[in-house]
Image (cartoon, rainbow over all chains, first blue to last red; front, side, top):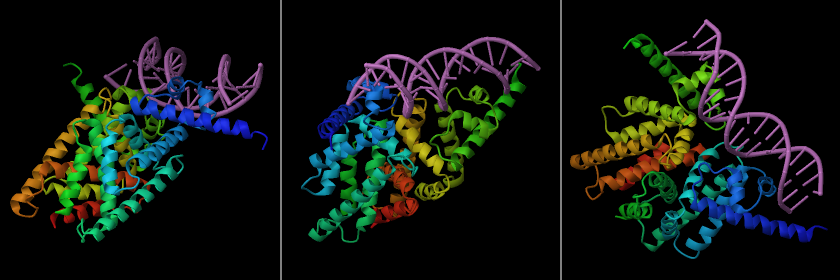
Length: 189
Length: 189
DNA sequence: GTCTATAAAGTGATAGAC
DNA sequence: GTCTATCACTTTATAGAC
């Protein structure tokens, strides 16, 4: 292809913009942020932003996708996935904007025609099955109650993680990671 | 006051509009519904709607408030509150629009200046303390494990209820009420 | 008091110049 | 590949009839 150089440059610019947008949404909230404001903070014009992301919802989806990549690599790589979940919840205290964005977009993605719909379907599918595997591993190692249904407990743990973020967003004194650890302890007793 | 008659009529009209709006949001989704569309479906003009609700977010808040009144009276009046929670989750399958509205508005209400902020703060405060009381009652009756911390388990149950709605919205095969019942069973074993 | 009509301010999205 | 200019549509606000 003749535009190989330009294509690579375009991808790099898109990554630059995505990283900057991720940073903006991490620090500032999600509410009230117009694309014009995001574009300004990122250092590009509105059409410049939309040249790389075909709509606002596509940009927001890409941000959450990028966040997952970074978080997975940082907090739950070569280790027990339940501990990884707790570590991610601890980290979430530092990125309130992403917490709010995640909940809002997850709710909106219910609509099958929403751009984020496939992302969330796939995300929950992967998270639930890998978490169920982690529970099975603990059961095999004798560090988890044998009578627990791995699929059910995985679903519950993910639900608690999502739901506790709503409560934390309204009341920052809520200890998200601690509550999950204590639930697991109560389920292991 | 001289306007007593008219005032009463205004309140009745507001209740009419609120009931109609609640019905619209229950059936249809929340996403994409403009105030003009709500007004049309309710049978009033846009300024007619805004005469009774000072902003869109105020209307949405009033809808959730009304829903809580109805649900509390219908599903958790003179009975065990944990059973009431399960019944409400079972009922929620019939009102997907309200489920989506609740999650979206709860996330947005994180902002202390959001009109729904006081509503959610108060709501979680009441729900958590009454649910903790219900857990204490079960412990006193010997039908719940004595080592459970009522406040912690109440917070976890509410988090599961909220989080499981997100998963259900994306995958309608999720059994919201059943998952909560099974979690309680696992915590009682 | 309640409504119809209309406009202001801001949003996401697009067309077309360079 | 990035801009200026503009569009259609949103929420919100106001003027004025009845």
